[in-house]
Image 1: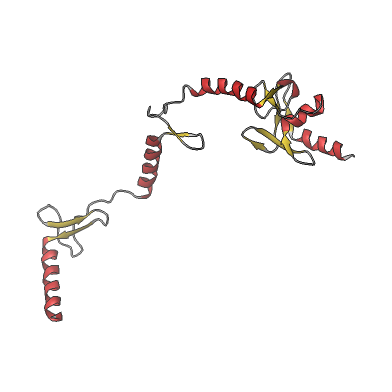
Image 2 (image 1 turned 60 degrees about the vertical axis):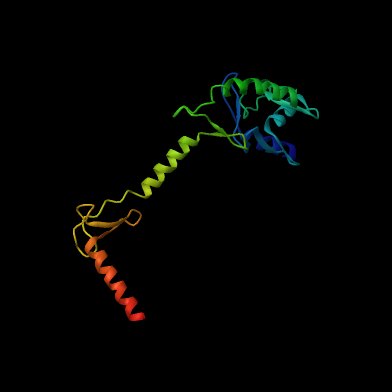
Length: 190
């Protein structure tokens, strides 16, 4: 089997031909703009390779534009050759129509924030998701009813200090005892 025949066999093994006039879907390596294929010399667009097998080489500066709008379709009859500018113009018309309805988040209705990579995020939804995730890992502490010494902490008058992060409350009796010990240690040190 010749090298070209092996390359062709490798290519067609990565294609699923759907019945009728449907797309021939590329199942090999992919990127956002379509399929990728190693032709034995370099990586090429899978749609370009399929076009070249049926119609001959694609001229320099010309691209295969899928009329079916499926970037992974390699069926030559679903493609037309265009310059890059014409290809981008046709895609902009389609993208602007689709993206016109994507200015607000469908969950909360707030505006999307546009990221440098072109993606969009809803900061309110991201913040709510992150808070829910944090809350699941950090449940709210339940207030204690007695101090470490066992004195009751039933009312706010009996509670001198309350530290939420540690869920630690100090009763008046313990505060007085702690202050007395602290003063004794200071007298001994002096």
